[in-house]
Length: 318
Image (tube, helix red, strand yellow):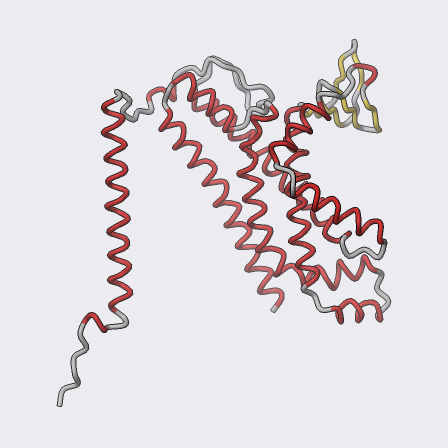
């Protein structure tokens, strides 16, 4: 006797595929409708998508560009220069925020009550003030208030002046500071604000990872004669990394996206250059597509790198 045939609407293997196909078809129809509506509206306004403008001379300068740039160069080169400036902030900011955040997170477990309290005050204060206000504070209140010329703040190998930050062997020549490395106050204010803000969140990730390590590990290391620093470096942090790394991914992506607030400091990043381009060309859709694609690519690269690091850490912990 042949086994009974299961109706298709009761097939547990077929139903999930049918549901996914239906949802996928619905998404495609929705996207097609939105794209069609966009094209019709642009056609009615005489603004059909075009990329011919991207080769026209930009007609504006970019202060502090790492790439050589002049107003005669095309828009695409201006956007590329803005992207390089953004990547410059993101890469240095990730490194700086990781170092400061780890230090503050470790300080939360210090045996010194004052240091432990300062770490908690730092985290609670910084996390509860909007980043935009902090950037405005660092730019207008701190860096633009620095003295200039011979009155600049001078440390060995570093000079803090209203005209910028000078690293290496700064020297004053005819009233103007010169050094192998100069950072503009706009870049310094943006970088400082991002590092201070994101490091407060990273410190909580680090603190949670350290707290996940059983206290017996601390006691065992102490019984072996390890100093507190050796205990952290050789025993605690290696075990805390599987908990810390996934949380760092979110904070790193947050830093990359928050870098678009550079306009508050007058720093010429990708968003600032794109806004100037939009105002001059009127190509809102094309410029927005470039912005969305650039920030999406940056975030995906960060996520891919952190996912790879997370897999490596998880394997090592096993």
